Length: 328
Length: 263
Image 1 (cartoon, rainbow over the protein chains, first blue to last red):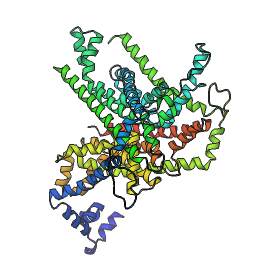
Image 2 (cartoon, each protein chain N blue to C red):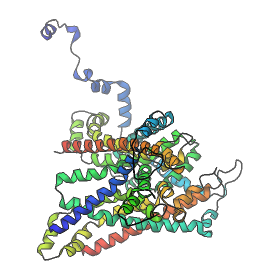
Image 3 (cartoon, one colour):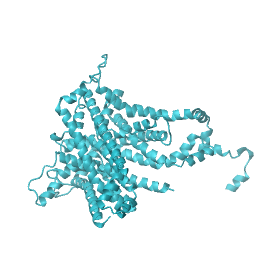
Image 4 (cartoon, rainbow over the protein chains, first blue to last red):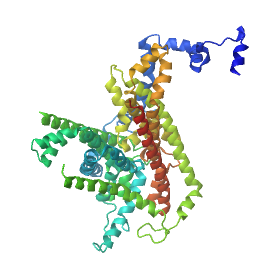
């Protein structure tokens, strides 16, 4: 058939130029498109403004907006402001925090717990990351890391529930201990700071593991070999070479885990008890009702976010100083 | 490093694997227990809990509702996250660092504070609690993850490819659609899966912004507060299998495409 096609060709149906045949050709020759394009690309400055306008608007209204509005509400006397009434700004909501120990106790408890849990996560995952990065062949590394990533995809609530089943009075741990003859009556693990800690470490472990792993993986093996050749023992090699050179991973892992741990709400509610109330529960309490307590809740959220940022900021500064001191 | 150390570290690794997996395996097993009472030992087994879920339209609706929210919020996050990445990667402009800081902000705010801030802002904007509010909050929260993943991929795109397209007469828009965008596809797909899972698993934002309909994590939470039952295990197991399977598939997919695109 193609031979016939060439034979019957008449001057009327000349193949249109390439720019008319393809989708892209037709699009770029379409007049409205050309006008729009000429308008956009008239100057590099205009091109940049059109690229940047929407993202900047989004960042200001959606990323920054909620935080600013929370800060504003935290300073209001009442919210929502009744129609026709002038807004009143006050720091009363912040002062309420210091006035009652049922407010600042959970606050300090949250920060202490978060710090302890972060430290536990670090101690637990460092050897795991070290083993993966230094003692496993590259091919198996990916497989063994993927194995650890699977539960990471499972949600917070499901994993919290799994811990409840593990630690309950008729849970697996108590059953195993009884079977081994170590205990007669079940140990009440649940609704204590222990069950809460185990749950939170369980939820955050991989946020620590991944930064540690990538820091350790980047560290060339030759460094520790050189140290060994120069006569450094295993402990000294770790303390003087590996640890200082992975401080960046430690610093980012700890920051991430600390921030996440302070923000948990469901896990402390389900795994903790009355003696382990965290600040997230205190804040949430103000939002269960229609809204007259919202300014106080907002003020408490601002206090908590400020404290968390301050602590992680100081921690990162400290880590930077440590690193500088070691490379001297 | 000597052998003893190596073996000790291997033991720590496998102990950690046990710590990660045992609670989930136990939870799955409990969903097959033939008794209303949660606890060990399990003496007889049943599939009744799964059958009761699949005949419960309310629970099936919750699954669908959560999946719909995940898909809608992911679509928004992916478009906006990619756009922000295009603005930030490989460009120097006044206020770059501040813009980058603003971009990652939603990912760094602790869960409860982020939920409260969205709740207050939604009220101020006049968004009623419910599906729209949840989709919006999930979308904003997930934008940084998309932007970071796309930025990483974009930084490996050889600049010469776009330049070549421009030299051959492509305008900036066509060069973007035919060179840059296809190159970004693996990153965008990977980020979408990540967003889907984050949204599907999210509890705290859905809890504070939800209306009368509950998303799956909120439903499980509400059920847990009124007592444990093997039915919850069955629901949680289905959610677990769904998320873990998608997660593993995405992980393999991104690794494969990363390997292929390496020179």
